[in-house]
Length: 110
Length: 117
Image (cartoon, rainbow over all chains, first blue to last red):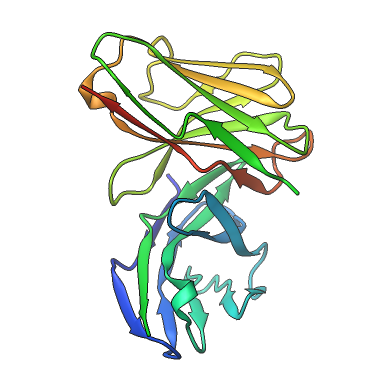
């Protein structure tokens, strides 16, 4: 079946550091890919998405490119802030359902 | 816009009792709602898909008689955990989609922490 694998956390960075959170997927067909973020005490929020190969999703300085050849959708940000501390989930669409990765905790220190 | 609420945010109950969790779309009509379960340090696992006015579709391995889902209106879905046991303790999250196909962006509620003693 379809699945998503994310790098394990927690990832701890200093403010203004470069962020990469790896995400790879296994799927039949060509799913849409998503990154969701969950801030402490809040529900998941859609951060960005890409619907086809080579698409780049971007939002709030974060970006991820749909790479069909490597079945990856890595999340990147050039300069993280303390306010980016949260749990990040990679997900793919399976019909009208979402299949999530395990989530990666990001901690940014000032 | 596209706000989803859940109530209660946390609940503690005794083993053998039933607990009802509400999921509401506050500013849009959601024909499709989803119920997830999240274990500590693990991913969200889809439990069921709920369409307004029809029976929920449960994922494999989810007991439909234990996790009763009702989607009586376009803004409200409820999950009832019947005869709860300690192993049902978890974080339950709902989401809702805008539009009729269920394929749109899912908007998530803040979750409900259930602890069964």
